[in-house]
Length: 102
Ligand code: SF4
Ligand code: SF4
Image 1 (cartoon, protein in one colour):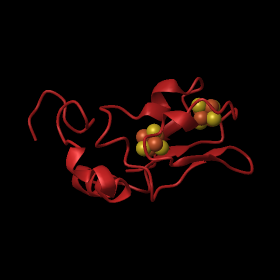
Image 2 (cartoon, protein in one colour):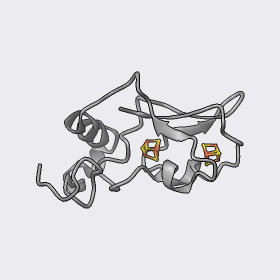
Image 3 (cartoon, rainbow, N blue to C red):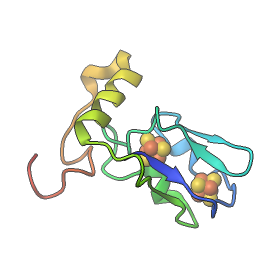
Image 4 (cartoon, rainbow, N blue to C red):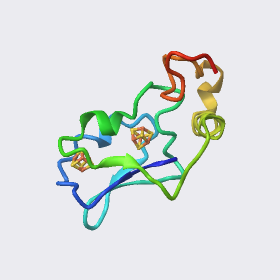
């Protein structure tokens, strides 16, 4: 599922530069995440980077936008077409893969 920002956001802006997909922007009320660009950091990090840095823990999985790892990885490759061959789906680059192999 894509990550979303709740109304608890304090507009600190810390999350914006951490997103590998430039999915975060300043909205009218709070910062926001474009679900068409969010890959839950699949392809780049094993955890959602926005959630990692948010001081008020308001970057959370969107329960209304559940997605599988494969779809998120395909999105990452599409967004970063110029480096698609370099993206890796491995325990180190997907939170879907922890101690268990895919
Ligand atoms: Fe960007 Fe990752 Fe946060 Fe999605 S989960 S908005 S890809 S930092
Ligand atoms: Fe809002 Fe959290 Fe991003 Fe700060 S880090 S802008 S509080 S979502």
